[in-house]
Amino acid sequence: MPKITIHRDGEAHQGDIAADSNLVVLAGIRKFPYPHLSYMCGMGKCGTCKSRIVAGAEQLPEPNWREKKTLGDEALAEGYRLVCQLRIFEDFEIEQEGPVRGPRKRMP
Image (cartoon, rainbow, N blue to C red; front, side, top):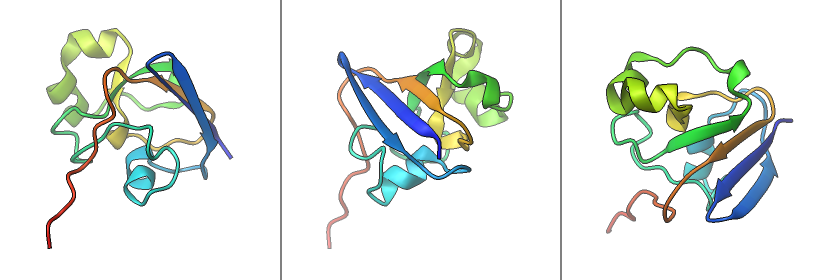
């Protein structure tokens, strides 16, 4: 099981996930990395899940067209990725900035 570490505001939050998981999908169903991961659309459009990869980048595929469009060349070169577009197979460590943001609750 991959160990996931999320750095935010000087704190590190760790948990284990099943291999071949997507962090945004897990957070969406209230499993770790919830409530520590910022995310919103899950489709690579909003950029809310933008994260700097601290460790584990070597396991990742090249950025897809959504990441290239949303993040741009400069952010990609600085080690940022959209975690909604990634499947995690090994230990992985990211850093996110700012307050945690998540999908708005739907009104009945």
